[in-house]
Image 1 (cartoon, rainbow, N blue to C red):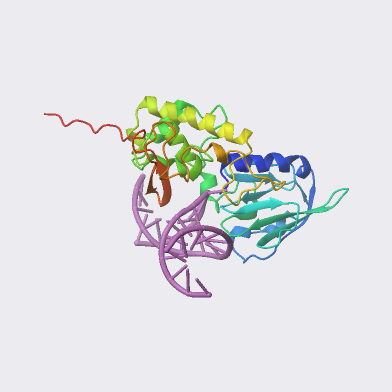
Image 2 (cartoon, rainbow, N blue to C red):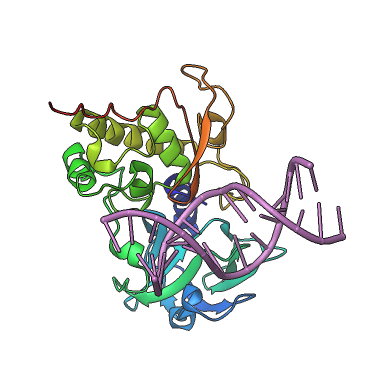
Length: 278
DNA sequence: CGCCCTGTTGGGGA
DNA sequence: ATCCCCAACAGGGC
């Protein structure tokens, strides 16, 4: 599942050759009807104004007031080459040299649909998306205000896309390891210092991962078909049983928010329980 | 070969 | 607000 750094990498590659192109036709291929591929016919005849992104969602504003929304899910890929299998959507592009854009998505967790600009009723996560982590609005105070509202495990809460946009399972594990926070710690029990530290860690982590063009575990590829370079720098994700890079304790695997989670049981302790008053 | 488990996500219902 | 299940498919272990 591409998270923010992977989606941003795709966005950057798409922007130069997609902006200002005309969509002649967008059609479903080997995909069922349904909300994941809705209203594709409306894209026909519209120019692509630009290629933007919010969290893990690619948003392509079109010339007649619609937006093409693309979410890669866990296995979605956008490619200029016709994929051998699991082709879900084909977009015919006009221009001096007409060409096609393909959306391949093995597991079909992704989406590729057209909405009226800003009408995200069918995409509740996008509608309620938190601040972009790489923009100035994502401050320690803003983050703290969000975290104080929830007793959910910090990892699950962050992955909900509300306190901050674009952090999924990989970067949540990594960020919490870096900030030495137990993934099950209730969000509202983190100290102010820890919240600020976590905010800084997320900004640094995602910024570095974008520079590395994302993390390829298995499915994710850039538009050019290349792998992201950040995988070799992961310290916790997918490394349960291996020694912690800081203290050499074996990383532990648990389930948080129905997602596999690895963390260091020594570095990432729950904050000490409040002592009972006499 | 079959069975079981796991997985880069998000939506919906209890 | 939180928890749980689910979509659909591939790959690995036994």
